[in-house]
Image (cartoon, rainbow over all chains, first blue to last red; front, side):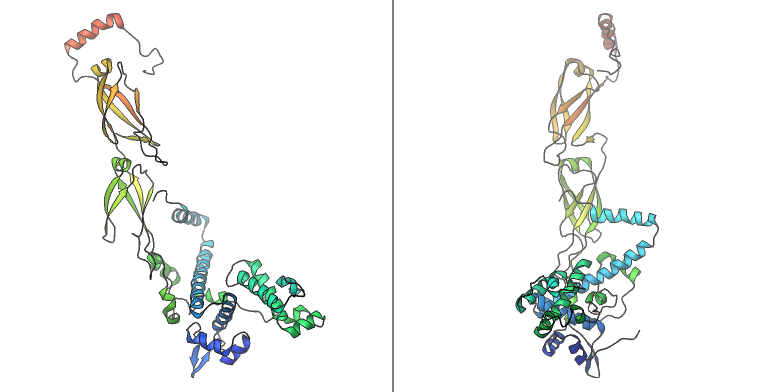
Length: 118
Length: 308
């Protein structure tokens, strides 16, 4: 797979709302971690999408860098789990109905039954 | 796509720049595709973004208002949202997932994740996560479950715990021991231990809902003449009045001596009487009964054999 890397200037023109100062601050805070090639930052597609979201979150919710880091980390965790869940569900969809029924019973036991007495 | 950017933002044609910005922010907060799963929200956000891109620029807005350009021309190249990348298995910004007890299962299914970059400033690892719940099965004897009491258990990790069994605990109930599960991550609290209770059967005690029943053996003379005899209850022995002329199978009810029910109210105890003959029928007894039978014969089966 060919990865497309973008330079700092390309990123700045891609995301008009992003000022050079803001990009420097986000990089400084570690919220964006571009690759370094010959001392120059190289931005991957994921960095570009993350920057776009970071700018929007800052703007929408007026987040400071720490809060922004937290929100992005939660999104990373949630989406990672979502991706894994999708993979598991995809695998389960291929299983015969009996297997799914068995799993359903186990899941029901773990997740649905409520503790009656504390 | 929205033909009317004002409608997409829900503002009037005379809205100020500040109002337009506010309207866009409101929609973005609610409908941003990276913050919600709702497909309809994605469409609303897309329409609002296009509209905002057009209207936030006074020159473009004026040209649109004069009919020189239409809303379509403004669309940005297809945007890829962060979720497209962050759901991927190789998201370098995501910390190591921890599925607690199931880490091995996870690794087995998904493999160890290949290249790993540490998260920003260790941020992802500093997360606080509640520990896993641990599940156990615990058998208690009938009396402990009925009266309540303490049972000492040893958890697989070597911890010894005194578990308080509440009075009236039923078979299949679960007792939750807060904080006795797996340790939490970071500052996250530990999980709980969940004890599924099995109540061991007791030959002397039968249970029916909140009521319990027992069998009380009585002697022939106690049955004939009536007596005060000692009977066992959950709370200890009590004196029970056996009525004169009691029969086997007759039941006496002890109110409020059953199990503690859900509302804290106790059920009843049913004591079934059972006449036990003396170990030997001696001549005195046989002679007396023979004499007695001559004038007092009766047929207990006359009532259909119900024995009462």
